[in-house]
Image (tube, rainbow, N blue to C red; front, side, top):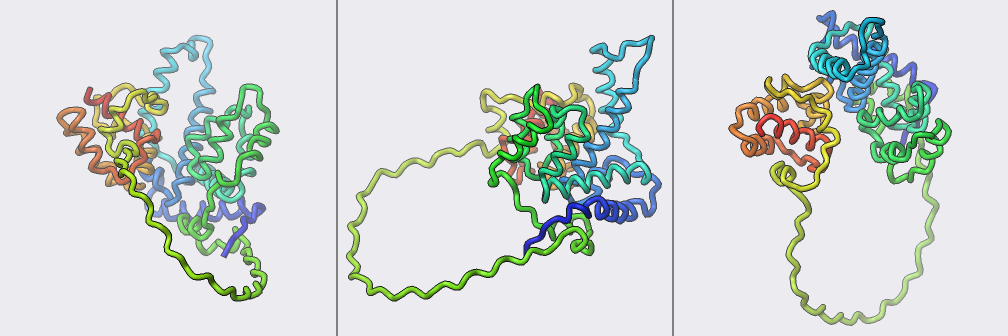
Length: 337
């Protein structure tokens, strides 16, 4: 069975789902912290957009900092504010009233990026000061990532909303994912609202096919056996362990360069909420306990080689070319070099 998103119902359904999730999250607590925030739902995309909304709020607060007595644009001041943000991200405390609009927006965007990606793009562009700001959204995109990567790579300094949308229209269909509507709703504990968010699309009935006229087969002649050829040695398809990946030459650490420079604390305590979310969801299957166990083991490593070996024990098919693995290796190198 196929489903089509009821775009006009997204806002209402997102509100309903958000209220259900928050009712469960705030049963006994007045506020929730960052650890619970990054696993509020079983939807990786919703959780990612929720983190995006929270950090956007932080940026708005920072932009309000102006003073006739202090230079907030000075490099040292900006670096101090960045360090402050890293500390603050590990001490999140948010109540239901302030969390609800962020969660509802995250759910609505998750609906659109999965089932109406152009509407998602239009909405983000409408909320942005300039089209180029969409590039900052990419790290939070988990659904249809290949399609939006093509858009982000094409955005130039003089692009307009119209030209960005025109670029999106040129993305080939094979770049988009087929997201299962029932699975999407299950991850939000909202299966009961499936009919309110989607309409069923009945597959077209196949046209009757006339039976072919039987054709008498010609006698089969055995084909000559193919000439023996030297067996080629199997090709090495890329690194399988963190050690292999770490020793590759010419790696550029784009995401890893953004990690904080101080690693005096335990690895987990030194990570920002954004980094914890990235590692937990992309390397540890969303399992916070597994991530904690891994970092505790790595904290007791004797050197970088030992740390890489301990980390690799938790490697369950990681993409060794991914930004997340590069970032993890940068953390280990900083800690043990």
